[in-house]
Length: 144
Image 1 (cartoon, rainbow, N blue to C red):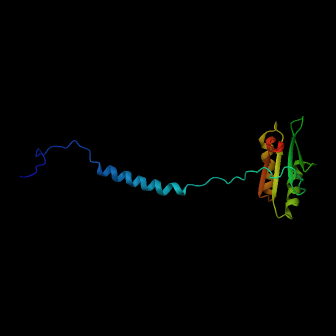
Image 2: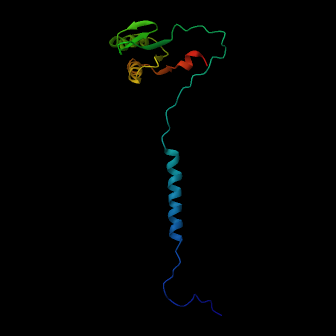
Image 3: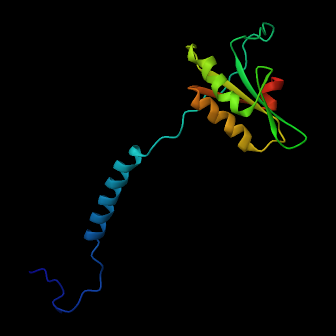
């Protein structure tokens, strides 16, 4: 009693799935290895609300660069309420942060300004050696 295989000897119309499974397993292994190696995004420091709202003592070591819009379209710059020309901001920031251990600066811009003026102030901070630069938005300023 023999087990015959059909015996016609012609072409077989069934698909051979063994090579397909081999290819899928190789692709699965490749994707499992590649996924953990993908680069991670930037770490963002999210400002936290103060724990004690009644004890709001202003810090005199806080540096805030303000960009104010003028009527003629040219922005005006201030560092802690002292007005500066655009060419004098980066040297003043370098002077301020040269002797500081904590290199934190905040940038506050008018809402109707172009972002380029705010980006320029951030660039001046980086050139002065500031490590952390925060942006003060109207919502942050109102304390909500």
